[in-house]
Amino acid sequence: MDILLTGRWADDDERDTWLAALCEAVRPVLPGARWWLDRGEAQPAWPDRIEIAVVANPLPGRLQGLPRLRLIQSLWAGVDRLLADESLPASVPIARMVDPAMNAAMAETALWAVLTLQRGFHHYAAQQRAGLWRQLPQRRADELTVTVLGCGQMGAAAARRLAAMGYRVRAWRATAGAAAGLAGIEVHAGAEALAPLLADSDIVVNLLPLTPATRGLIDARFLAALPPGAALVNLARGAHVEEADLLAALDSGRLGHAVLDVFATEPLPASHPFWSHPRVTLLPHVAALTDPRSAATVVAANLGALVEGREIAHRVDRRRGY
Image (cartoon, rainbow, N blue to C red):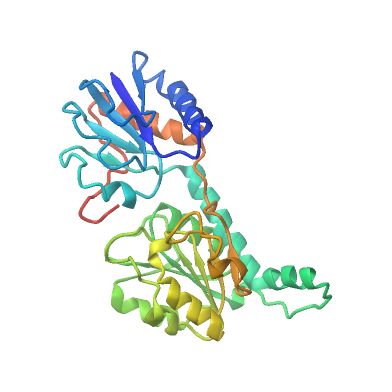
């Protein structure tokens, strides 16, 4: 079986690290697999016998002309950029990356952000830079209400971790449906349920998928629904946020603080006001980096399911966008 690895990488070393991990993980499942590597050729000459494409947000059009393609396996959890490629073959299933190690890492980052906001550690960091020794009031976890947006794998993992630490946690999803793994946590659904939740939220953690319905969700209206001084943690996608509206809410003091890991343009331009804003804690899209070692085993399991005729795990619903 012929497998294509294609994507956009930080450098050749990152690409080669992925290739090595994938080859090792897939070998026991498909011992005769032949790997083809996209090196960015203007007119690639991949064989038409390729059946599987393992991708990391490839350039648009890279999966055209593959008549035997049976599966597109993404290495990233988000597939919004992949689905934006109108040249993707419509009949080929797409699987997104759902890695338990990534879920755990995202839950850790969400907990760190909420704990930082609860205990005012961002204020202490600013005081250290100013050489200021001042103790601030200390709130208890059970005094804060945290709303987690998104009930998928990462949202559920974050909600469980936060609830275990004693926070009052609720979860919200954009559409109705079952929310697995959230026993004991309030789950609300639909646009009409969002504003009441926001009005009673001290901290909002965004882990929604990016879809047409959620793009730009965090706008002036959303932020105005929060209580004065509330905080936002965005670990999902930069396009969920209307950045001008967020800056206005931060400048006015309406929003107390924002922890931001993702942005509309990445890397974040050096001139962007988020870099120096006193009410922003900024991360360079590192809330849950994909670990090639664990992710490769997820890929191998799906490739094994394909060749054995079993159901593909975490298949993307193109209509819903995830």
